[in-house]
Image (cartoon, rainbow, N blue to C red; front, side, top):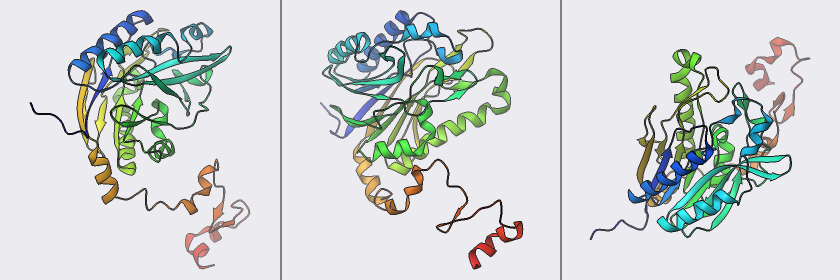
Length: 323
């Protein structure tokens, strides 16, 4: 019987549509995890806030009733599923930490059913139909990795996708795979004019994280249109994907159907890529202090320049270089 090299791992990305009933969504997710395991998946990732429809389309205090402790009932149930199928489960949940304190959280459950820990979403958006600042406190656990049975993984969540700092800090802890459970889609009225560019940007930025950090990236999106408060709602664009350390898309799911995306990856390629493209070696960590600033206002060649008082002609780049 032919066996895979120990460095080969099979991922299962669960791209689902969600109904208004959390219990039905949870039941579907458990069924999909089993299906993924039977197809060979060893690490299974669910989409952001998979137990419910994407409720952040409105600011409604009633939605806080969807939250639960993490660890809690969902992680206990998913732990049993993980142990039964011998799979790692990445489970994005709405966490109630304390009265009035909530997080957008991922629990990482190892293949023996143990909850290894959790990551709380660090970057919280506030856009039309994405009113997450109303619900979620920014994460305070930092960027994290876990050594699971099959790979060392890092998990970030949706809006985190747009920030290279999060990907870098997770990769620097040794993550071989960055998982991004997601809930992103189009405003239907904008789709014709901007839909293609929006999707391309979403995929491109994550592929760039794979290249810059020499690792695999797995993005798991939901699919279908959800209108929990009426109106046009959001049309989630699916297209979950896995990219390798060169940014190549190894597999991509449907834009409009549920799908279990099964993708085999070779973790030996991470070491190979990082050796031949040593971006981590050549980082100038002595020169990056300003990354901790909100904005580098008017700074030039290490000296502060008051751009409002300098005559416009003196702001010519040639003048600044020569003088």
